[in-house]
Image (cartoon, rainbow, N blue to C red; front, side):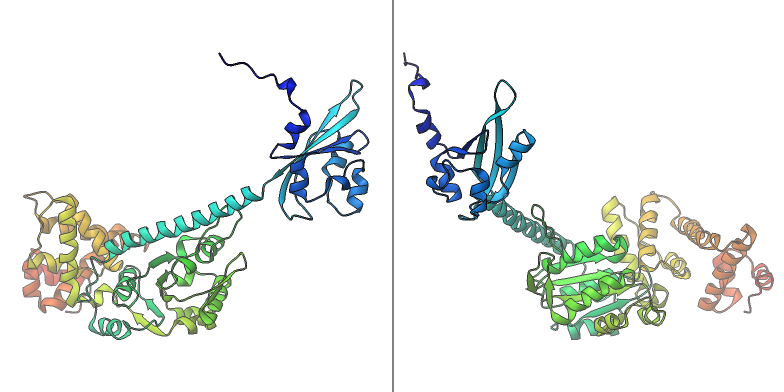
Length: 452
């Protein structure tokens, strides 16, 4: 059986001198009566400079600043503070604890000094580790996005002039501005530019100005530096790669000015003060005509001139009839696979789709075809489904024009008849398609004031 050790047999001074923390003891008058070895090592102050000296006297010599001891004497409670040694330059956590006599007067104050320099170093190392981890996570996300985006990089569905531009600028790092109506495929075009560039081994990042308030957009682009939580901005993460900024017309003039400085200087001043070189291929896009926005003073002229080096305007779907069938088939393949269906459109069914103007362009067509695939069941009359869905599309648009139901129906009828007459030329050819007689269609044309 082991014999218990009696701590009374140990020298208290020996114990205090073997502590990791510095111990500094003063009496009720603030006179130093004891310091251990660790205190002298942490602060760099020799013992002889302290013993028998009052706190005020030591402070006047500049051996330390902001005495916790004086605060404890004054406030008569435990006080903690973080300071720095004027000699060793170490970061120190100082805690002063008062000991009272039976009358409630302070008879001793025990000061505990803990060297937290190592803790701060570890904290900095932890921040750096988090930064590395964040960048690693971004790279993994980039690779995942790259795999998904890379499935559709064909230029076949683009107008010839646009595909030629992409091929011409593929080996350059020139800035590109893409404009076009909502849903025309600006995001897809930006991805194609990236995949045909010489930067595919480096990241592609995308951000929409419409999704963030000004301060959050600034944070996402330029990042933030905090002691415990740093946030990398896309301008740093996309370095050596490509950054696509959509809805650029929604960017505030403040951020435009800040981003213009980066574009001009090719340098980024982080919020922490560090300056880093920036090598990014920028792609911008907007649903609006930026030149008009500049004239209306809603957009910075200097920023527009900087980003408008290569300008690509994507035509709306109604002007891309030659590619219409390929878009439809591409979306059908996608949704047939997704919903385990097998829908193929015949010539007449494709013509029905072409009759509609598609104000929402490719995005509206894609959504329409997904609904078609979802709602279709084997044996259904797909032509009838398309007709009813198109009528809903028309009515949704016309409902926003404050028309009566009768006026909406007349407008829908008129649009359909005009499109068919433009396509087939005569009432005789169009009447069978609409399922009515030639005289009935002629009468309807007169009522609707269709000059054909």
